[in-house]
Length: 287
Picture 1 (cartoon, rainbow, N blue to C red):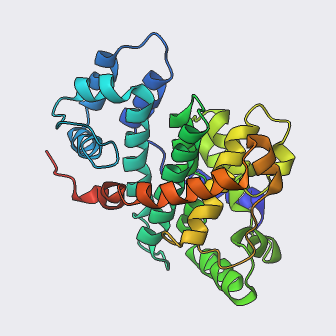
Picture 2: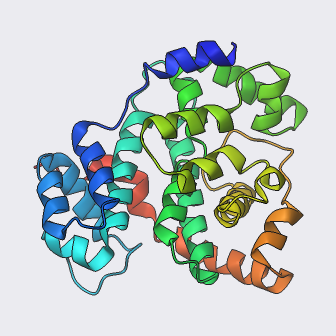
């Protein structure tokens, strides 16, 4: 399958519905109010119920239950609520392919793991845009979702090659002349009107060095490290069974020393344990 053919088929993929698109737009508008965001979300009661369930999960550790959307927005911020809405949409899209030949929930678990790992690393590094690192981690393998949706047989073939040859998914795609998930994922994210701080890590999380001069080299590096560690934990399944290496360039960009990396790994084990609600979004109460 050639990239041009794949790009044509990307048009068939689900895009965020008007409510989610409106949420993304409002969250990026510095003049928008919490009421604006709440009013947009209330147009989809099911989405609202699921977002409130995630707000009250152990991951955020709020001292009391939040029942009102306006309050959730004020406490967590616009971008975090946007991330929750994107999480719900992505989960729905990922698990909606009836012809899939893979364990979609295991892939989703990997998505969530990298989101959580990226946000934790951003916190430890005092990076200000932690919410963007979360969503970049959540969507870093968006191209795999696209491949599974467009051609489940091609996804299965790539997974077989990576397991047989013990190489990365990225390398297996190249061997089979299948468009690489980093490129297709970035194209899809652009179609969803997501900013470069999200699309660049999707493009570059397997090729940090090429993005070393980018204004978002730090975010690319954080997502790369998060992806590597989550893969070593075997938290979920990225369908990569070998060939992954921790880039020295990523460590250099972020000035991470071995002691900090060890501390990060220890903290991440605890943090992932709080992300259970993200793994079962479909269990949220419908209203």
